[in-house]
Length: 253
Ligand SMILES: [Zn+2]
Image 1: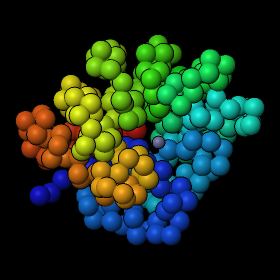
Image 2 (image 1 turned 60 degrees about the vertical axis):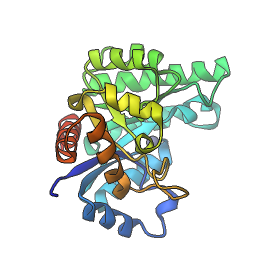
Image 3 (image 1 turned 90 degrees about the vertical axis):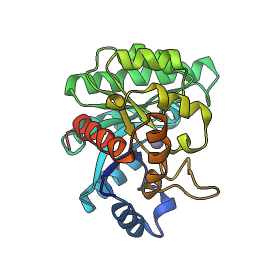
Image 4 (image 1 turned 45 degrees about the vertical axis):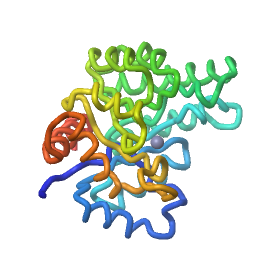
């Protein structure tokens, strides 16, 4: 079967890949993963993401400020990260991951920190007219409201309700389906309710492996194809083609 797929969200710069990074990337290319979008989450990983993209031509960077960092802003220099994003925007294909995580943060003060910082990230994306990759966990509705003025938003690893999913799709944004679709019924429902022309695929490597007790890697993206093609009653090639085309359009690659 000849097809090409794109891993629209991963973290290959993370230390978990220090041992065999090059091998992992080669394995992805051999598994028809033609390129990978690597997302930074803070100052340090934004640097390593840019470096990785410099080193490997199939890796494209997005620069982020994750809600985990935003929540604990007293421990991080938020202004420095925001300036870093702005200054390096020409070298990136998008901003993110950034957003709201109410799952890990229930405290209202910490949530407010996330909201304040996310507004600033969205402002940068809006001014630069660059795609935004959002991380939303239990804060999907709030994220959707805050990104209202943006042209292109990808909901990375969308795990919210089907009602909010409909609103996101109607707003013209994209849903990124993670490898979780291989074993989570909720993610299958989400994939089933997402039209192929609004869908991209991701592994979120090294997290969320579809293969038990294993570190996730972009080559595992192929595991999602039979599941999604069955849900959409179509062939794997069409799922691969449509989702890769969307990713290319979103990130201009
Ligand atoms: Zn991620």
